[in-house]
Length: 507
Image 1 (cartoon, helix red, strand yellow):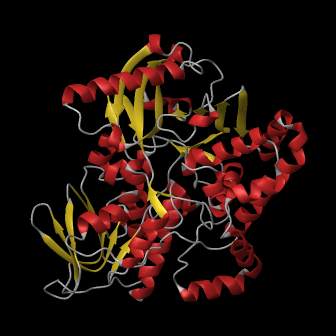
Image 2 (cartoon, one colour; image 1 turned 60 degrees about the vertical axis):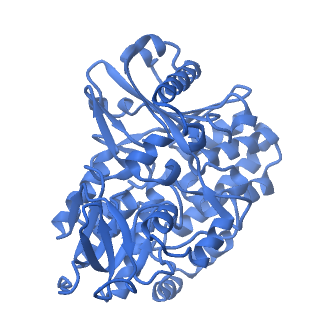
Image 3 (cartoon, one colour; image 1 turned 45 degrees about the vertical axis):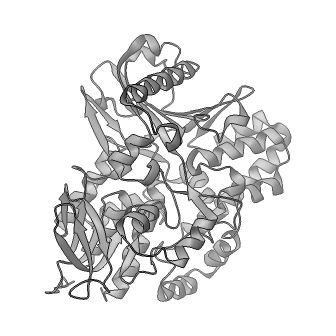
């Protein structure tokens, strides 16, 4: 395809931020022939899927449990995004998605093999074997519908018509589940209160809300893809995903500028040449035919659109959704003796069901060096722990108070982790603590949030905003747009956003 050339703008499309959603948008558009410029305030790509290095350890900033690297179907969005710009990553399969350590000795491993998982869960709840099968099979029904159609923009009428005529039964199946939540389906088949709490945790571990507030579409994707495409860790760490997409973007003719912090989006009505513009911290102004914000919607409409009234569509969305909590993160380098033989890579710990949604209630643990030993010095491992935490707990502290609180909370987390890793504290080699303030500072996310969560029970995904905004030529992408949080979800958002923009640019 012939690259679009427009003389009166600096790029066809400017993307603010190089998180995975922004990079997928950028690479998809560059592959179609658009002149794309990505502006990244930090020094490396990836956003919350980035990395940092300390004393021979290469730590993932965010989660290490990655969906989307499968080889079949259409839901393997990370594989497809890389292939679009002729790059590929080596990945390492993980046989166990999560090892749960829950109240009342509820100890469950989610095996990559679906039948093994169903058998293990049924052994714990033998009176619910039929209900367990029906619930997770309903999730498969959702997944199979998704996995049979090309996942592009639901805002583009021609795509909707085409996919409906190609796959009418898949589309009708999705329409049925679109207004439902996972909790609605679970209670249809299951009665045991403890098993329903387990399904709440199955949802909470990636949606940060219980099953009653988790859209059935998202649950169907996660609960099935872990057994289909599986969890696959990129060799070299999660940061390799952003690096590969940035490399592919440049191979496709796009540009990425680091250390380029956008301070303002200037609507086309205020721009000198009538094109939407962005202003950088160095005073430079750049114009484009389209601008995509990979910042959160809160940052986009409150910080970047300075002086602009909040559109009514955003006001309505905020009546339904709120910012999710941020995280208290503990990045540990440990001697190999800290990790017992047979330990799984990913764990979730909770001692009391009443604390599941509370700050620092649920603990998430990843030990990525069990899959890729090269991330740590020889004879050592990485233990990455994170737990929900709210910004208000960390503000208005003096530097001394802030450091003391970090040390106090880290010590409590390590003590709790010793349920799984009994010799952890005596084998520590390196420790770094991140707080909601860290996530706000380095990732540019308001209050360090990781996306929206519903304020109350809603009709599935029907309340989520899509990529188009009410500001002409401005689009949003990432975890505060449909379909929500997670790397595969933001990749979906990127595919949809690029497809929608491409239709407006006639690419």
